[in-house]
Each structure stands twice: as structure tokens, then as C-alpha cells.
Length: 422
Image (cartoon, one colour):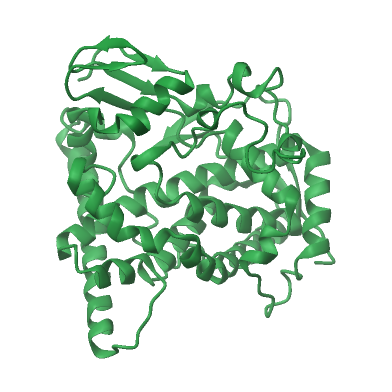
């Protein structure tokens, strides 16, 4: 059982640059963390270090380039539209119920799971239409708390966690085998999913491909689900922002009620307030508020001697709200900061390392463009179609560690109202 441990909290841009970029090889995930996570993800990109990490990342990068991501927008939008249809049904069903509240978490999680299935494996898990399917009922057990407690859980609970992980790994193996057969029989097949790109690289063994899929399933859908929950929460808390965003979306995008409606990357890029809102969500509510590093050997950071084995906390949840970097309103949710001249991509932060949501350097989040694009499409679809308010606007939000990040403990309980005309 992990006990108390001294750690250094890194907040200065200079120190962050050394740890994340210029001396990144000196700092690794603690062995205990890698061991616990690898029980679920295997030796995927999230776990490996050094040359192996460099080789894996290089082989996977083509699948995460913007040139590739732009081809995934039809997937993002089709699932966003499917989510809207499901929410409409729930809203209409709620009219006959005493409580007319929708819990956002379940819908967000199933939507992002379906998206990573299609975009990652060319496989629709169909979780939106069938929330009780085998995968949706077996959430990937990657939370720090579960991973840390695996060794001391009672046998029955440990068995349940292990069975969930094994089930999902077997599912990934079957999907990969099907994809391999498809590529063999159709040499012209040019899939846009991550697995297709990885297979064509000829770098990964079959089992390592499973590890990569476990990694992307765990990290890829959970974090965006958290971000979407926070987006709905923020829209409910700021009704003027919600109204302004809805106006922009309805003015620029085709009606989501039209089954033939399609959008492209340029369509979403042409929405400056949507861009600003999503950036502010990712800043203010960093889906993964902290990560850890440990010095591999004795080294220095900004001139200070660092002994081997020193632990560091890299905290987007702290740095993203630093008033020295973001100004006196750093702790205020304000999308307008991303609308000012010269601040569209920076939010006015004084140093690039003041925005840590996706980290920086060789171990920065490979899925950043994927996550940003997916979130923008989902937010546009939801706010364009619904007016939302919290069940209890005055209730203090409590946090829960779910997966590898933090989200509202109640799953964001909100009342949705269909806004006709789009």
C-alpha cells in the first residue's frame, strides 16, 4: 500500500522545460506506477521509455497528424449526431417523469468509447445504442486508485478487475485479427483508423498492437469524456456563454436534425468562439490534473542538484491557473481570453509552459489534435441542439477520480431542453 512520499511540485516554466523537453531522458514514470498501469495497458506508448518509446511514437505519429485527423471528422460528427438523437429521446421520455434530469457522464463515456472504437480500430462498439453491451459494462480498470490497490484487493474484487481487463484485451485481439485479414484480402484498403496505420508500419507485434489499443481505449476515451462533462457543466454555469455559442454554431453549421448534414475540419475551424470555449475548458478543467516523474539518476534542474530517485509532480491543474502566467483572472472561467488579438492560440499566457494540459516535449499527449477535434464536434452538436441547466445550480461541485483524471462526482446532472430550428 503506497504511503506518504515527498515530491517536488514543478511550477516554473524553466523547470518544466528541462524536465519535459531538454532533459526528458533524465525523468521517467516511477517504476511502481508503470508496473501498476502495465497490468492493464501492457507495454503501450503510455508505459515504455527511451528508445522504445521513441520508436513506438514515430510509428504511430502518422495516425495522429492533422492531415490524418481531418479525415476523422465525419466519424466525430456522425457519433455527435447519434448522441443528440439519444439525448432527444431521453428528454422526451423525461417529460412523463417526476425528475427531468439527464446524467451526462454515461452519455459522454459511451460516445467517446464509440468514437475511439471507430477512429482507432474501425469498429463500432455501439455503446450509445446499447449501453448494456459487454464492453460498456466493463470499464477499463486504469484509475490510479484501482491500479494502486490491485495487490491488496480481496480476491473476488481482484478477479473482477482482471476479468474486465482480459475481456477487453481479447476483444482487441479479435478486432486486430479481423483488420489484418481485411488488409490481406484488399491491398487497396486505406483505412483511416489508428490500427490500420500501425499495421502498415510493420513495427508492432500482434500483442503490442493490443497494448496500444488498450492504451488508447483507456486514455483516449476517458479524458475526452471528462472534458465533455466539464463542458456541459460550464455551459450550465454560464448561460450567456451558452447562448453565444449556440448562436455561432447555428449560424455557421448545417442543422444536425438533417440526417444528410456533414461537417469538415474547416467548418469547425471557422467557429472562433467554439475554439475559445474548448480551449478554456481544457485550461480551466484540465482532464488529467497531475502526473508524476522520477529522476533516473543524479541530475540538475534549473541549477539545483537533484538526487537519483527524486519524485516530481507535474500539475496542469495548478500551472494552468497560475496568476503569474495567466494574469489576475487566471482562476476565472473566461473563454474571451482566447478571442483577443494575438491570443487565439495562447490565451494570453506569458509562457508556452503555462498551458500543460497535453504536456510538452517527446512525451506530450500524442492524441492532442484528436482530442481537441473530437471535443469541438461534440460540444457543437450538444449546445447547438439543447438548452441546458444544472439540476441544482447552487450545489457545490465535488470531484471524483475516474479513470486517469478528475470529473464531477455526480456525473453532471442537468436538465436538457430541445431548441427547435437546427
